[in-house]
Length: 292
Image (cartoon, rainbow, N blue to C red; front, side, top):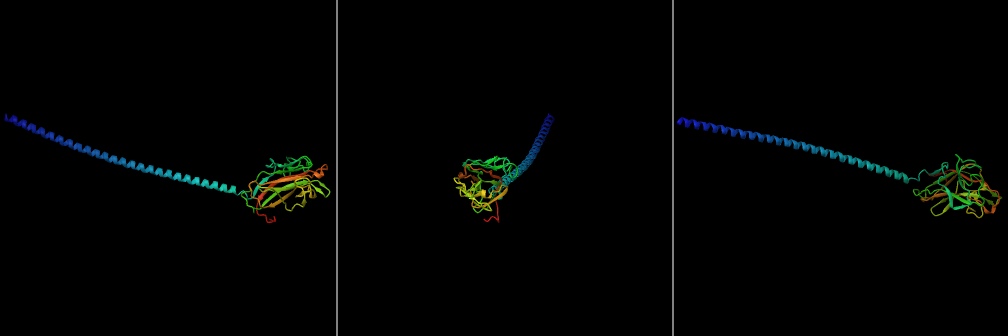
């Protein structure tokens, strides 16, 4: 009986020992799992580092974008500078050639002056009388393209407005054009004629060529009577260049006009071909021989 009790006690003791070992092994495994979790934490830190790197990369990209925007703004500034230069060039229109027309393609903006067009014979185109063509090419402005000017004519052609506001009152201006003319003359008392006038913003002013007009127009009853101008006294009947030098104009509505008059006192007498104008130019510059 004692042996049986001893064996049972021994058996229970052994079982208890085995159970204790199992508990120890579980705790050890739990420790390894904790270690594994620690390793997971390490992986998590690694992920965190990776994210941190990612953030750094993102910041780098942001910096790159910022640089790009800065460059774009710089380009925009450069464009603005270019525009400013262009505006500056536009403001410098009072340099060199300001206005130039050869009248080949169109009228050059000239029209018969609505304020002075009595019996006007002015026309633009190809002449068929004398002369039979323009100075260069075929077309020009003339008092009559096919014959003589009108009796008792008192008329002008006027240019478009030319902005001289970039100029100053001391700016030297030069007008040149090629012309041919033949006016009627009655003895020494009456002479048809013409002249060139400039608009100063308030009134028309006769401008003088170099060399100057030789005498006054003698066209009674017209706006040019007793005004200086080209007359029958010095009919050229050949093409030559007229030159005008003048200062005192800086108005934005500057214009020039070519006026011609036939005296009423000579009505019924013969007429003449009149005035033919081609190759016109207005320029700014320093003209030592102008006398200005």
